[in-house]
Length: 192
Image (tube, rainbow, N blue to C red; front, side, top):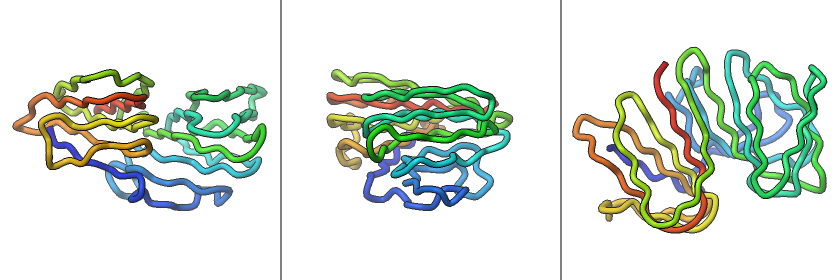
C-alpha cells in the first residue's frame, strides 16, 4: 500500500465556505475545489451557522471542548457531548451551532455521495491493527490520542496525537500494519 504521513503542523488553515469560521484541512481528494471527499478539523469559537454542501454527506466528531447543540431548519436539535459526540447529516441540511461553554475543535468528514462511499469509525489502538489492500479503497487514520507507528516502514515517522496517515491500494499492495496505543478515527472511502 502507498502510505503517506500527514503531520498536524502541515494541515492547511482556511476559512469556512460561508466565512463564519476556520478549518484546518487534513486532506482533500482530489486536491481541487471539485473534490470527492475531504477531512478537516473545524475550529468553532462562537455560535454560528454551518456551511451547506449540496450533494454531500457529512460526519462531525467532537475532538475537544465542552460540546455543542446543532439546530436544523427542519426542527431537529442534536447535542454533541464530550468526549467524542458525533453526528451524521446531509450537506444540504441547514444547521446552526450553539456552543455550551467555549470553543470546540471538531473532525469533519465530507463526501460527494454520487462519487464515493465513506464511513467513519472510532476505534481503540491496542497493539497492531492490520489494513488489507482493497481495490479502489482508501483509508485515512487520524490519531485522537496516544501514539502509532506504521510497522515495517522506518521511512515514516511515528504518529502523535493530531497526526494522520493516508493508506491507498497500489499495484504492489501488501497489508499495512499500524501499531501502538491510543484512540483513532478511521475513515474508509471507496468508489461508488
